[in-house]
Amino acid sequence: MGKASGPLLVSPQPISFLSGVDPDSGIIVEKGHPLNGQCISGKVLVFPYGKGSTVGSYVLYALSRNGHAPLAIVNAEAEAIIATGAIISKIPMIDRIDVPITMLKNGTRVTVDGDLGELEYEGELASP
Image 1 (cartoon, rainbow, N blue to C red):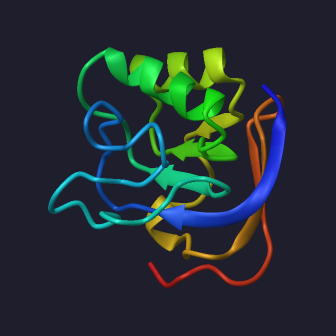
Image 2 (image 1 turned 135 degrees about the vertical axis):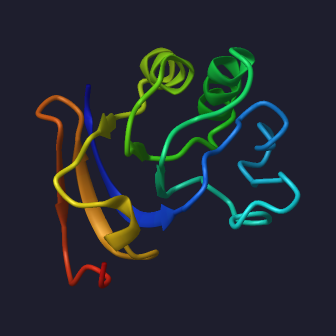
Image 3 (image 1 turned 45 degrees about the vertical axis):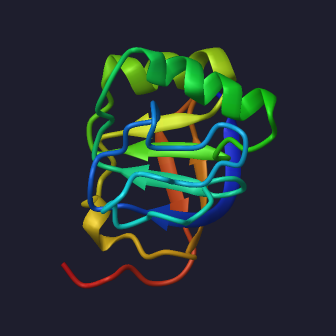
């Protein structure tokens, strides 16, 4: 659903939106997470899958209402918590793309087309 373009922010680890992302700032606050301290706002957020409580869907919604949501979400495999949060927040989301998410590089500009389930990217991919 929907389409968005922007720079990638890639996590090799799952993300928990409940207590892992500050809904008032969009900053990842989960201690020990590879993206700890980084802001997801204005980025196409890539991560394998979500983890944690069903309240994570509401945190995505709060991020959207506060203007700090990611532009789009790309998962290796979507699960219900993240998909529900993306739907209610009108955040374009896709999963099971044609390249491993480990080949996507931070900062690469991409377009996520949630209606077609496609990811278009500019530039080179990282080596597998």
